[in-house]
Image (tube, rainbow, N blue to C red; front, side):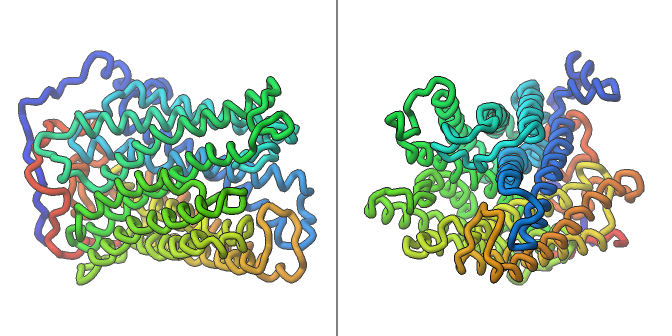
Length: 552
């Protein structure tokens, strides 16, 4: 097998000696060195532990939900406990896992490596972002375990501003705190991409994962403050009785929906855009081909970021908006699907006649393409006014959302984690177990959420702890699928931790991939590159030969 040439040459004139402060932080080992580190790679690993812990807690809440729905009468939980459980599941999974997981873990670790930088532009701000995230996470866990919150993760008014007697304000403060962590991360990424690219790395030599992080960061900076303002206004109304959203005080509850979804629909792309960047990186490597239509994939990422701000009101077709406004938002909702369709087409064209290796990362990514495409197609159904009214607030919405978020974001994250795990840790994991986990998650996911499309179409409303007996068979199937899904997620947790001690050494580039991150040792040294590279070609230069299997 021929070795793929590195797409850069070293620049010897760059400083290699760390500053005194950097030596102080990184010279020692142990807890102190981790808690004071400014190394983007260590901070990424801190995020990995944090968001994985939140994923486990959110997953346990989902398990309780599915157990309760095994029987029509909801005998496992009371209605009040069920409300608090699905609220906890939604808040943790959306704000503390899905939004931060790819940018904060893989983005933090890889962005400087992929553009030939020694670190992010603001290393101390990067560490502060993790601390801010931890404060928000600790606060929301305190709210959940000290009595819970029953508003649902959307905090719709006037329920959240008046009727709920749970700890609404502390929960909102916790979410706003986590939002500042995301804003700081986005700011750091944008400045880093603008000012710290290696010599020769022009904008159209950037890896597509970097482009996706850049587009995501723009959304984080522009959309997150709107959510913070909305939550602040709810707190003001609850504390001071000022009529903002409560009709009894002269407020407008629909105003909250406008503010909330102006953030929360772009937030869908905060979760999905980085996942799309991972897909582009993995497909090119395991198909041994350059990405088909690189400029169109870049334009699609930026297009999603822009158009995503214009479709928020398709969540409100039954909220009393005018027919003309509904028609406009319906049309825009169809339009936002075009950039995503471009990406799926380009990925498929990249696979065509490629030398495809069905390794664990590739299986996860192929699963992403299938599940995300199905979720996107059902999104077109929801953009249609008549059908949207029929399935609004039913399990059809639950299924669609999870096909995009779990079938999309989580599948891609798992694919990216397996792809870059040898780079992060310097160790290889058992390939056979990786393939088993990818298949279990894919088929477990289908068994979990396909029945929910049927349930929603038949009229089962979401957020109800009990349901008519005729829906039990489909709910049992969904719970059975969730048990398979849980096993699929538990397997990587087991064998990835196992690989840290017993896995064979990976070497610097086990996949023979292109890109600057693969030209450093595994794991990379503190300052990434002994000499800053000079880039003289694009990010994807493959020979068409198969990926080596390293004896697995």
